[in-house]
Length: 301
Image 1 (cartoon, rainbow, N blue to C red):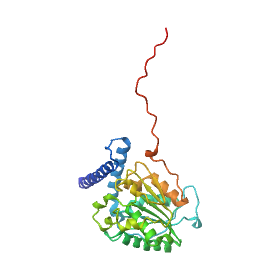
Image 2: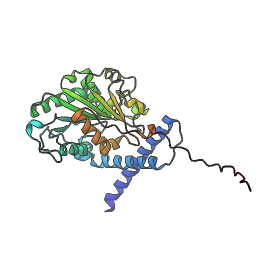
Image 3: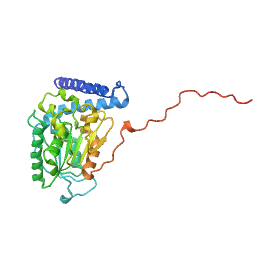
Image 4: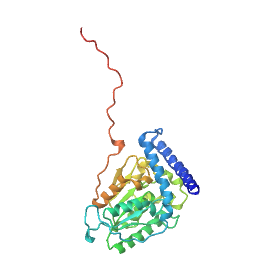
């Protein structure tokens, strides 16, 4: 077993370093010292675990799969063919593939979405506009296979930027009813400098791609978090228009494994509205507990 544990341990150290660097970026972004609060430690550990899991499962998502219908019935309901919601196309981010969308895909299927397809970016290194063109072809395949007129798009990280470019710059709004992005660099991110592939340059704040996606052509909702270490500063994950939902204490990759995110995505795709949780930063602080001892008053004899 040692031959298996050693590479896993090494991988855990690499993802620990990656997550630690991200935490340092957030401290620089906020201009505050890193505090070892329960929330901060929990967020860090969850993101570390998720990053390790994503790398371990990456080989299982290398191959492309054609869009197909998986019979799905919402919990407690008996749905029929005529009641089917629109197909959903999931768009992965930088350097990953369809494997890390598995949990969200299963969640949506369990709740009544029979058409939940995931695209893989090919080739390994290319521009965001090229990936957006391939996304358009994949959307056409989904429409032909399902017989639907439109789809909903859900993009994570760079995948949100790819989906936004397809919708807002390539005329995809005629085929897309709604766009939901998770931790997407709508206004770019300073961390693009660490990317070694062509698509990283398109995530720079001054790139032509970032400028091209600002004019929203379809209803759009961006889910983001101040704990997202890959979008720097974190507020760049919000577009100028559309809706923005902030979730507190949620890491960048953790968004694809979070029940809070899954519920919001399902609500947005089913009704266009979501019950928006209040971010911890917006919760008013509790009344301070007085620490000074009140002056003792002498009682009359």
